[in-house]
Each structure stands twice: as structure tokens, then as C-alpha cells.
Length: 222
Image (cartoon, rainbow, N blue to C red):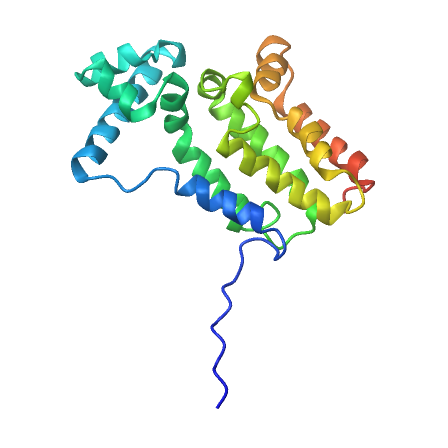
């Protein structure tokens, strides 16, 4: 009697792009299982950092300030998060994972089930709105130049764009195109356009959709 093949799990993204799934798993699993006391200490430090952001803004979040707010030694904060960027990235972690889940497995058009161009339009607009909500913290957590394009969370976002581009324009250089598209979603650019230039978010969303249509050679439906 022939063996019954194991059930095939339903993928969150189209089969054939394992690099995106692997990056998603790596991002969600980047914090190893902690002992109960270590987990409590981490949560305590993040709560202290969150209070500082709420009361004084992201610029006030330093390793020293968080240690003082949490009433622990500065070395404890460094051991837990490595540096200030690591601490601020951990603060953004919850919203990052929530956003990741929305485009990996949420409802269309942001999630699977819509045509790739529609998903690209929805992805950029969702990123713009998310950046507007966490803009100060995102700017403060910006990685240094040597880590900017290898940051795990940013890599997941760009690989998602690559995947959709490969479906929409399979003969294009999707790797380089993804960098061009992601440049329009850069938090520093969003800050400049919205805070310094006073452009409304609706204009940025319209510009994103126009860019996607021009890159993919399509026009919005309906």
C-alpha cells in the first residue's frame, strides 16, 4: 500500500518565493525564548522606554535615560539591546510584526488574493500611513549606513516588493527596481515632505500609486 503523502501547508505567499517566507520567520523569531525573569526585565525596559517616548519624545530615549527610568544599571540595557538603535527597533517591533502579518497573510489587496500591482499600490499606501503614525520613532531608530540595507525588518519589506514586482514585471531587474520603489517610502523623505514641506499624505499616496503604475506599465482599474 502506498504511503499517504503529508498534507501540504497553505502558504501565506505564492509558492516559489521561499526567501520571503524565511525572512518573515526570521523577523518574527528574532527574539529567542527567554527565561521568565529575563522576559520580565525586557518588558520593564521597553515600558520605561515607551514612557520616555510618550513624555519627552524619541530623542530623549538614551540607554542611560532608560536605565534610570527602569531603575537598573546601564549595563543591563546594553546587554539586552546592544545599542540605542537596537532598543528603538525593539520598541517598533510590535507594530512591525503587525504590519508584516497584514501583507503576508491579511485580507487583500494588501494581503494575498489580489493582483500583484494592486498589492503593490496597497503596500506603499499602508507603509506611508504606518510611517506617519510612528515617524519620530522610526527616524530615531534609523540604522547606520552600513546596516541600513541589511536590517532584517527592512529586508522583509523590500523582498516583499521584489516578489510582487517579479509577478507584475517578470522581465525587469526587480532587485534594483525594489530599491527605487522603497526609496519613496523612506521615513526621512516622508518627514521632509510632510513636516518640512507640508505636503498632505494623500498626495504621497497618489504619487506612490502613480509610480507603481508607471513602473509596471498598468493603470488602476475601476
